[in-house]
Amino acid sequence: MDKQEQWVTSSEETLACLARMERLLETIAKNVEEHLETIRRLLASRTLKADAAQADLSRVTGAADQSGVQAWAIREVTIDSVKHMVTFRDQPIELTRTEFDLLFSLVRNAGRVLGCQELVGEVWGYELDERNARYLVGPHITHLQQKLVAEPQSPGYIQNVRGVGYFFERRTRHRQ
Image 1 (cartoon, rainbow, N blue to C red):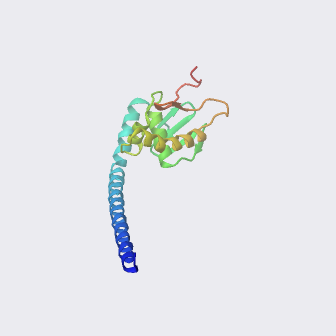
Image 2 (spheres, helix red, strand yellow):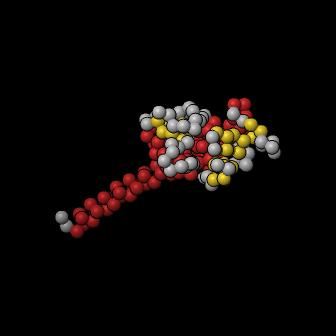
Image 3 (cartoon, helix red, strand yellow):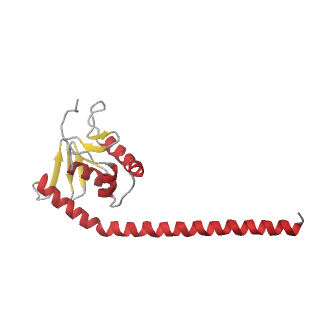
């Protein structure tokens, strides 16, 4: 090959590469737009979702405290959804918003196993396949479990049902 043929071949490869990069960037831009739209919808519905969750809880497990604020307690965990606070053994614990929402969902459904897809739907407001839902939910559940440790050797409050999901243990003793 002479230099001119090499230059043409090189230019064609460069153009093909640039065309692939352009398609990739267009796909990324489209995905970013879709994610932004999902985030906008989640932000718009967050208030309605919280109101619905409070109404649901007040009927089922809610109990008014002295200040008239709804608080929900199971075992040593108390959740105040209005103040967005959680106490464990009468001590406040720091939770991220996601951890709070996950715990709130688990406590609201205490004793009932919630699949990862269901948790993603309740907490994040969108759908994922089971594998990706597990990857999203798992680390947050692990952090919650670490923050809700009564005694190092005792069973935790949030239990895993392998291959199914998670539930908040209502009883003080671990199931045999």
